[in-house]
Length: 450
Ligand code: PLP
Picture: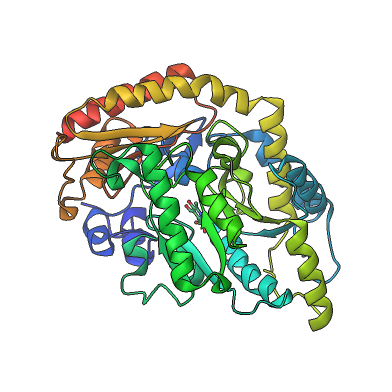
């Protein structure tokens, strides 16, 4: 029994937890993490866990990277805060923007900074609208997202998100946001249909939706290269080529949400490179700063930027920005993160270790509890089913993946069961030995769950 003044009890008494069953939290209480060490975190009882989710898909360099701590301290001592409103700027922001533009997989013109993935995507929504007003197409405002997409939790981005729990009882989605098919072949492919045919059907369904709505009313399509939160849905090889042909035909902008895929997760710097996306706007966050500071970014191409310039001249300002857009400490930490990625060849490491991870994941796919093991690079999921043959999932009330996640803790692993999916997204610095150790623990967890 907890003492009334324990941290545990005080958490239950005072903290409103995001993405939590609030009723269950009253009885279960929190897992209190005190410190980190490489890919591990340690709780207040001294238990050590492999953080197999990189926190929330973000702590790419683990939990004890001193260079990032020092970069933050250096910048805090020099200039702890300044903003970018009006014509103000600061050195880390300029350098970070330059560096990101140099890394972009397609030519981009400018970088806008914010604090979270949601804010970057929310800004993208506003820019779709601003841009189309600027170019005299005020009706071209609808944005198409996909079933099972995850783009954030603000009013607009939760609307883009295509998961029922993000809409239900929040009275979402808002108008002008539509959802098209999810490219998950395992769940949505038809019997006898090849992946290629499935990709063609998804693209056709997108085209049908655009035609139904009227091409002059559809402004943009937003997509994560891999839909990670929706169940690590890796699209068929030709999916994005087919989808982009449709978008070009109807002059619909493409927004790539690189919030999870960006900075090496799929084996290239951006998921857009892995899957051949040529976006007009890109959003990124999470691994941009290895999660040591909250920062996100939105890149726009020259066509969009030039229209924005003209519109802001007409209105007198570009009326959008956050107090912490381009926070110098966050920008300095992000810059140092990108330097570390380059100096330590993190991309080379991911490419070297990913086949081992994917092979181990596929082996676990043989487990009676696993319907499909899928993933790319250093992210993957085990979709849990009660019947391998029929692919029937467990009843939602069982929250089987969440249960498995809980059991994993007893094996010294933190993961995040989401829906039917047991997700794995370890820090990019994980070594072969650590990876082998993790996969043994995951297998034991599945055995316990079965
Ligand atoms: N986009 C994607 C693909 C994400 O996975 C997330 C968060 O997980 C977001 C956007 C939202 O980012 P944030 O939680 O920083 O607002």
